[in-house]
Image (tube, rainbow, N blue to C red; front, side, top):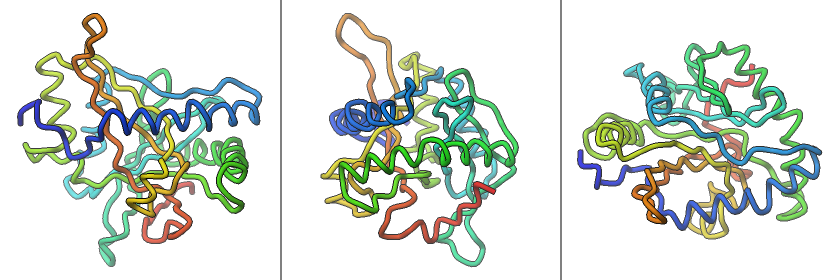
Length: 247
């Protein structure tokens, strides 16, 4: 695969910047006002660290995707990644593989057991989710529901030598074109919802930014990925996602 070929998960930089701005300019200030503390806007790690995380999450040949939950560790926003497996009775249902849970925080990434994963997700839902939803009720409309998790299809990661994110990152790393992976918190745009009602305006999403070395003001690489399916949107109430966390 050529590093010039964008992966299936690629989104334009302008779209990524607009989604990030929803969080940094609107959602995060509102959250900080309600929580009374400084909140993070992104979680960064080295390219090899993130690639190893993807490799560990996709090691089971039977996996059908990855679910990422919003979480809270030591009162700081974090992310819990879980491999998903298709339900044998319904291929549209993606069940969490509770034996393969990983934490990504400001310091590192590590494998955690399902009990710790559940506790971190519950902490987020108890201590931050209500703040996000209260803000959403004010900005959008009463009854606003905030994203709890995002599901990403296997097709986005697969080692197909064509357009998988893992292949793409391996190419970037081997050619020394990438220096950082920044996972930004963001929000969907009005135009996103117009194209797909399952990506409701203002709801939380994640932008995976692959950053290259800068030369002067020219960034050699600034690619972005964000093609997850949020849960909920209100239209589906998460039916069919098969989520098993929190316990």
